[in-house]
Image (tube, rainbow, N blue to C red; front, side):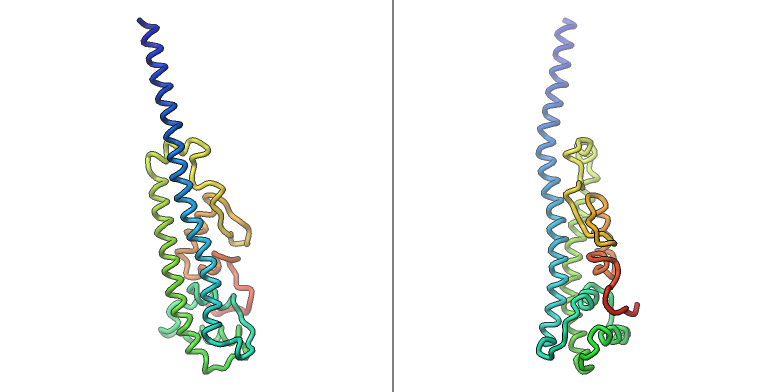
Length: 206
């Protein structure tokens, strides 16, 4: 009788372990999908930042004026370095623009500023979207299931497949990458978080 009870208990434990492992497969698939979702949004934001900057130069017709583009300056502007520039801070924006585009006619400044505001709004929407995805991911990682399955190496998230550019331009992985993503969606100068935390062109007024 005792032997039967012992074998029954062992069978129950074994079945529970098998079910745990089987459940971990579905949990891991969910984690991979959520992490890939964040990675995709982050990569899209990086692409959009450069795209929005180039769009401003195209709309302003800089090429037609034989004025060499300064994408880094435009990225800094689009990503929020000159937030509220139209509300009493336009001088800083214009001063920095003059340094970035010394041959640009001053009568083009207001038009470029308006174009920046349009692209900045688009980029802010991108950042808000990424922030929402990160918040949802953070909530998921705080669940009991993650605390349980996260004990398994292949079920711990974020893992090293999540990447982001660090302050020094080097690639960060896992939790460090997620922290960097959080910093860029809460920073008024997210171009720094996407790149190297410094503007390599003319020094911009802060």
